[in-house]
Amino acid sequence: MTSNLNFKRHRRLRTSSSMRSIVRENHLRKEDLIYPFFVIEGEGIRNEVSSMPGVSQLSLDNIVDEMKEVHMLGIPSVIVFGVPDAKDEVGTGAYVNDGIVQQAIRLIKEEVPELLVIADTCLCEFTSHGHCGVIHDGDVDNDESLELLAKTAVSQVEAGADIIAPSNMMDGFVIAIRTALDEAGFTSIPIMSYAVKYSSAFYGPFREAADSTPQFGDRKSYQMDPANRLEAIREAESDIEEGADFLIVKPALSYLDIVRDIKDNFNAPVVAYNVSGEYAMVKAAAMNGWIDEKSLVMEKLTSMKRAGADLIITYFAKDVARWLSE
Ligand code: PBG
Picture 1 (cartoon, protein in one colour):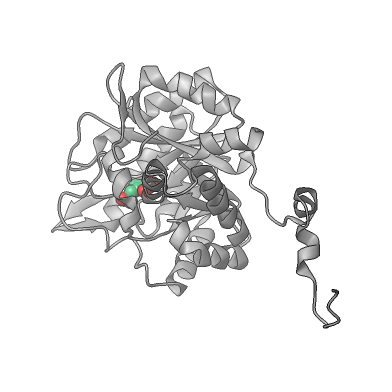
Picture 2 (tube, protein in one colour; picture 1 turned 90 degrees about the horizontal axis):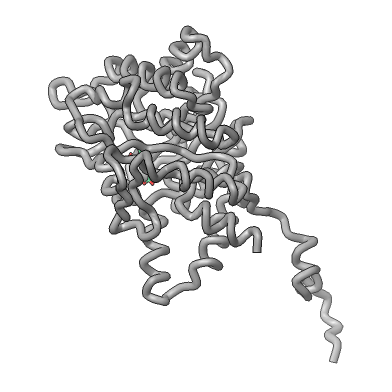
């Protein structure tokens, strides 16, 4: 019996896989993926991070094969985090010429030169106290930290970094880094700013992977309050004025409204950071057989694209690149 009621038949566009494919609005591409990895000092090391199954801290001798694999899978870019042996009050390891990150960048640019290397520019992995800047009277000193960040960025570009991604949430970090890079002659190196970075419980597993848990207090005086939306616009606005070329929103999944806000308000590529806690939750559920990992990961990354993300930093990048080729 055909209904003579007057209603719209939306199901017409869902009748087959081919039909669905021609009306699909958003697509996940390999080019959208940025693969994060952790390089640790030492030799022959491949330490799986217990809260991030499938993600390991790798020593220099193990990263070339990893990077070749990433490149062969069609992923154009990686973001590097360092796990140094020695830490001090002022995060010296972040900006020395032969720091672990600088060594890794040089090696990758030598062995897999086509791969774009994004350097996360922060001090927290290198400071003994685990904060993202230098401490004065129990608090992170904004302006003094800027100088060290600028030094870090210049040393990373000297090593061969293609893009600088400052993540420490000091005010003025974009202009401080832009100025330092320009003065050093690196006018064509873009800045991918962690413009909108919330103070989030979703970073827990990363702090294990990067050994960067603050030894006292928390990051709430520099990272944003998860309750705020307009503040995200203010943060992005100043970063664009200061010269940011890309805007990162982090974390991704609980912040897709913010991804949309940033996409609608600014004409810069938007990057969603699918962070460690988001990865760990999926892995834990998948390992228990409670969800279908592949479908769930593809769904959530596609939802980031739908929200307005142009690029996605994700620990799932290699899996996704494989699934996209199937
Ligand atoms: C460093 C930094 C952090 C992350 C990326 N860069 C940790 C933090 O701010 O504590 C988190 C990434 C993740 O959770 O995957 N400042």
